[in-house]
Image (tube, rainbow, N blue to C red; front, side, top):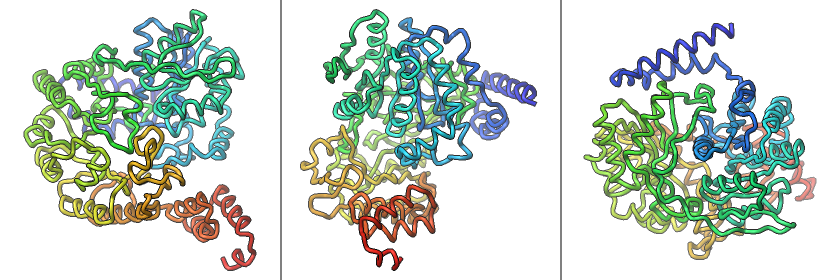
Length: 581
């Protein structure tokens, strides 16, 4: 049966390649991708371990690893970029996506682990510990395979949700070979305070890379191979029990000089969207949003040329003819309008049937004529990081390009040109009033016909390290005593519970208007737990008790909530309260 499945899969993929050779037929791949996905993806399980035993990975110098949890829509873009750059410089590298292996092994048992709106799963030590125990056998197989390859360095891309699993995998690699150098890098290590904390609190981690990884990682590998001390710019490292911060590395100026990402280490059909290929148009952002750490990580905005982006699309299509859609993974495709138009011109002139989409910012240049060109060049959708429709709020939070923009016109022009428009919203931005929050609801009421989807953030308005609001909270009237999730405004008007009410009102109205929402529920599904956790964090245990009790009865029952409820009872210390409930 497995042999027959493999034959069917090969026939289908070969057929896709034949169809893709004719641009006018590529549309078939785009529209029928869900059906083909079921025929191919659900039947074939790629033998990742067998793949790693090939000669290609013998005597590798570095393994770069993506641990859970992270997106499984398509192959990991960061690993593909780093491996391509290292190979260009004659470094033998083994990219390992343990995240997708765990997803395919656990998607039925733990679907919440790869839900984009869930973050608690991978950030709770007890849950992660239990997950590791359940998957010990397969995790050990991959850890052993990585160590057997003879690597000198193990690098981990760290996002907020992948930290704990990365620490586990790194420690197990060290146990098997104490000489392997462990390197952490990625968005969650961009802030120097966070990077130092990782080094100080985790004896397994030897080096932390800050910011852009290509040049820094290449220099680390070369110095370790040559037996030299690592003193590379853009790193924080431990030496003689001291944590040393090297100078900041200048970002790569010419993005066109970077090689195209290498996806040859991954099987697209192991991912949720196997017909989707990641790509980037730029690094950094032209706005200065006070709640975003994009500038901390990328340093400054840099754009690729339109010709380079088009050439990459052609390059990937030649290697993976089944690709039906390119998803831009950077924060904005329209930071450089001139190069965006140039890419569109190349696609139109080349008469290629290419479909693509990505994120964008609100700016005055997004006219009807531009949307028409985007659509002609294959743009199917854009997700605008609007966050708020109030001009005064946008100005307060640093969305400088939105000042002169007509948001109403942009949404209507997008719809008229045939480009699906998704709008991202946040709740309780610094300086936002109840009346300004109400403007968001009035906006979606007026434009329900023109909006393809909304993406209301369940994180509401998180203020994290590396952001302007976190570094200078007093400047924005923020009190971070309760942390980045539960912060209050200094005037007491903007609280976590008030932000939560704004979120609930918004999703309820979006549901009533029948606007598709990335948060698919008309109400907060774990409302009791969210409020209980807030009171638990602020040590208002008596207030937390009824919410935990309701959460256990009406939402979901698990040991963590039960333990927190018992902690509340113990801290309240009155039997009468327990008896009342």
